[in-house]
Image (cartoon, rainbow, N blue to C red):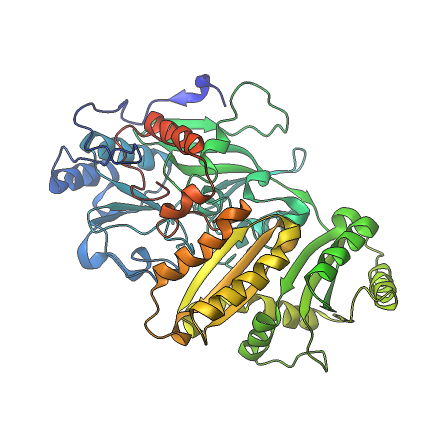
Length: 494
């Protein structure tokens, strides 16, 4: 993106000047409204149409909270723009009034990043839906931000391609939210995070200016690559309205296996062994400690394919471009590993039903918000240290909260560990105390408090564990430059 891509908002506004509010200890400026809410809503109705501005009981529960099960809060208003121009008009009006705005997507977040306060205006992108183009020559897909990930995946598949990004919430999460949080998912080890799937973006800035850079080129070395400022920014720098996504050739065959292991070191050794044999054809390598595995089997109502219990389990996907690949090579590799003592046992899926049954164990996390009172952690640390951290974390949690029920699982190929404690197992437990306790163990290891779910509301006070003062200052400076009144998603990230 270059400065030549900058365009004024639909009304020509470049942003009002005036009071900017109080400056907090972190250097961020709190919005200070210069117009009454009623006057702002009147201006929004005039610009967008009355049916695009909802208030009071017109606002449904979906806009009040996300998958964190944070206490629902009805925002002051909910905007439903139909296109980029509507988003531009809305932000220009809110910018001039210093009115806080919270962008919302599929509301599937696990960090509270899209939750609005009672004084905020939420702006939902649910009407900005559709696949605008699949360019076979460039292997790209241009999509509106409110489109669900599953819809984008299906459009890519219909055109003979594959959209590599994949999450358990694919049917509900939206492309804009995936990019705003730099979503990870099941196949990061093979294709990277959401950031790695993007060639171009269209973003509406806080003052209504539209930043358009929807190029399809892989190589574009013309100064700052501005799209990366917005990917992972959680809606604090701008509202993503369109994206050009990279597509990949379809994998012609997929083979899935559940493997029993002696422990974490055996899992890392198996990952390296298979990566040496198959390279980028290893599409997923999901690790489940027994606490999680046993609970997943119970939740899904299935039987474990293994007669005995084991110290660790790995769900592995081999995805090949060879349509003639019947899985023999993968099966042989696992047999060799078994004979070499590298694994304890293995079960290879023989049908689509088998594949779904194995993945259902791993994706039982979709039931966590219903079956548990979950305290979730999504951390990242060097692959070699994950096993020791799990042992330490489990021991310390048991010492501090005897009887707690906690579950450990993750994508170790991309250094991502998930931990969930069921607060129901420790009645009256202080969620914040658990967060501080676990993140306190993570700090000395120079890990990340968020591997793929973002910072949002839940992790903002712990961000300094993973970011230096100089890094935080640079982030605040970028925020001030693009959102001088601090109206975009206030209270999130910082």
